[in-house]
Image 1 (cartoon, helix red, strand yellow):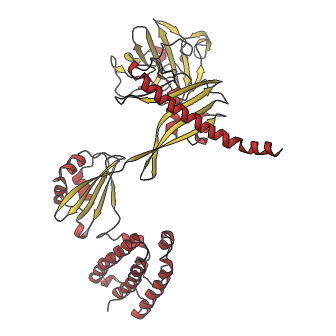
Image 2 (cartoon, rainbow, N blue to C red):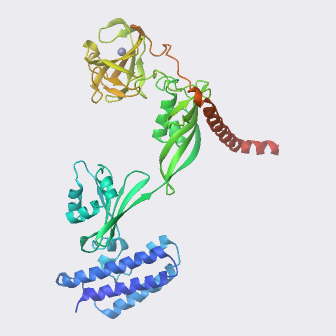
Image 3 (cartoon, rainbow, N blue to C red):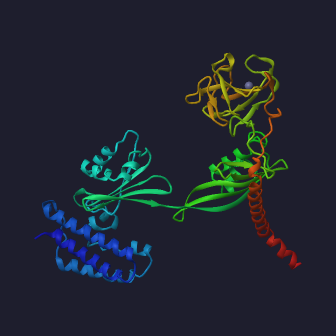
Length: 487
Ligand SMILES: [Zn+2]
C-alpha cells in the first residue's frame, strides 16, 4: 500500500472542497484551485513511480479524510471573504510538508503555472536560452516559423526578459517578450505550431502639479515636493541656461512644476515630461513651456516664445561647486599671484563634463599644466577649453563635431591640479572672457509659422499652473480664514 497516494487523496479532498465552494465566489480562485489539482495529479504519478524513496509515516486513510473535511469546513467560512484572507487560509498540519503551500505546488515543473523568467545577458543566443530552459531546438524553429516572432526575437536585447510557460513533456506553451513599455510579443502553442499576438499596453498620462521652496539644496526640496530625480534634472536642464545651479541657488528660491506621470494598466511606470515650470531665483522668476511643433519636435520656450536653450550652457559640469573664479588669484602650485583665465568647478573624479555648445573638437590631448585637455571651437568667434580631465569622452577625436550637452570627458586632476576639478575657459575672438558673466549670443525665437499655435498651448498650460496654484493657496489659507471669521 502506498502511503503517499493516501496522503495525496487527503489533499485532494481539501482542494475539491475548495473548488466546490469557490464556485460561488471567485473565478480566479477556482482556476488556481483547478491548477493545483492538476499539479497534484502529476505529482501523484511521479510518486507512484518513485515511492521507494518515501519516508513519510502518517498512518491511515480515515484520519486524512477527516482532515480534509476539517479543512473544507474552514474553507467554507473563508471562501466568501477577501482574496488576502483566502491566501492565508489555514492549512492542516496533517497534510505532508511538501504540499503545505500554494507556491510549493506551483513549483512543480511539468504544468507550472508560474512563468520561467530568463534575463538576457550579452552574448546569449535564443538557441542557448532554449537549451537552458530545457526546450528543444525544434521548438525554437517552430516558434521562428512565425514571421512576427522571428522579426522581434531576432533583435532581443541584453537586460530584457523572456518569459516561458512550459507544459507537459517540457513543451512550450507560451513565450512572451516585452518589446518596450507599450508592446509585448506573445507566442502561444496552437497544436503543433504556434501563433503570435502583439499585446498592446497603452500608456496613460496623468498631469501632476507640485511646488517647493529651497532651504538647503535643490534636490532635497525637489524630493520633498515628490519629484523624481529624473524630473529634477530635467528642471535644472530647462532653467540651466539662465540659472547657474552651481552658483546662483539661494535659500528661499522656489519652483513650480506641471509634469506628467506615465501609467500602464493603472500602475505608475515612470515620470514623463515637464509640461511647464516656473523657477524663482533670487527674486527673479523664469517660466518655461514645453511646445511640440506639428512636425513632432519638442523644446522649451519662455511665454514670449523665445527658446530656453541658448547657444551656450552656463555650466559644463552639473551640480558642482565653483572653487575658483575668473581673475587674479594666488596660485597654489606656482606659489605666486597669477591671472586665473577660467573658472574652476570642483567635482568628484569621473563627473561628466559636457560641451557647453555645439562645436568642433580642435584639440584633444595633454597640454602642459592643463593635463588632459579638450578645446572646442563654436562658429567663428567662440572657443571653450576643458582641462585636468581624468579621461576623454568615449570615441572623442580631433576634428569631430559635438552636440551641446554631449559628454566630452570626465573630471580628474591631470596636469598641475591640487584636487579633482574642471578648469573651464571661454574665449571670444581669441580673448579670455569670464564664462560666468560674458554676454552670450541671444536665444532664437520660435518659428513664425508656429507662433499662433504656441501661444494657445502656452496660455492653456499657464492657466493650469495658475489654477492649481490657486487651489493650493486656498487650501493653505483655509484655517486662517476660519480663524478670522471666528473673531
Ligand atoms: Zn583653473
